[in-house]
View 1 (tube, rainbow, N blue to C red):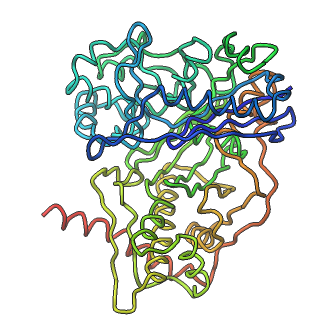
View 2 (tube, rainbow, N blue to C red):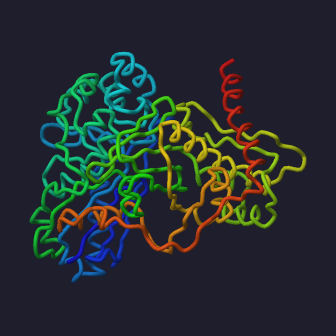
View 3 (cartoon, helix red, strand yellow):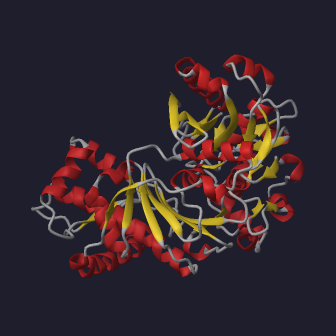
Length: 487
């Protein structure tokens, strides 16, 4: 038997097929684009998600018809927080407002003022990225659209509706709506009431490793699947990636250096730290939670700088590695798109500090890489403040291909970072594993195992003191620059 994982990302949809042993059999991709009608706005047409799903699975079927015909479980992963609004006939009311849309900052303040216990219930600060404040924005600025709302679904759950005909979400993705009582794993009437909604407007909830419905017959026919597969609850992109990388036991985690950056750790219980802007969410498997420190510009910072100086990002990182002798004099604050952890400041902006006549593309590129390493350290600091200890850490994402970048991070965190052997252990793979669990009833922790490790990057004890000093400068710079901007 085989199992399919679908990852509905921001830039594309990925379909991955695995066998019963978890070995990858094939994959296919279909691209997506983002619409930015105004500054700070980020939207997508949900119909494009579905078109991309059909294209990706069609392509997979064309390449691997026999394997696709034996699919018995399907798992879903997806970009979190997106507000997909449906009317009573399941028609999309307006383009979905995405995770990186910051238009609802004022509505976040209004939510917290109206419900002082919001942070305690949700375990998270109201941030513009979350789903609930987006609905308040629609209520205020598009009242006719708000009046038509019958259901609010997250991106992957809209795809689920078209796959199964069911309104269902999973605990991990629902954690990012700001409507979930994360500790008790259920919708909160109080949180919903702040946005004028009730549980009638919400999908039902299942664990990510549980079944949520079966694939509709016409889709089974389209893809030549002989027996309708179960569709698992799945997970938000980071929780699904954790299932793919094997970060499901308490204390296991990963650092992701993608467009954005994430420091993720699994927990045996709910451990919020709203003062540090920590994301405290349910995991995609039962009786497990996780925390994330999230910063918005990781490899995006280096890509931005590479365009600025007209050099390829990989060439810059190679030049930095070739002449690296320790922390540089130049410093970079990577707040190009605002920041979540630890500042929760959508208006924050990036800065270079300490430039001189000796500064060039290499030294400034090093400052960018070190700024990202300090952002990871910020995340570790606030996770530690929440009482969390990270026992093991694995690297994922495009930035993890740079040993020097990982060494900078390892030195700042004071812990080793494992690098897995080549392979794709992201959201689509984790989703496929969840589909396997839902179909077979296997123990999630026996399926969501760690991949083989290619190498381990150790911290540099000889550079720790110098990085400690620069990190103290880095932390002080944010406050000083923000005070100057406010004047």
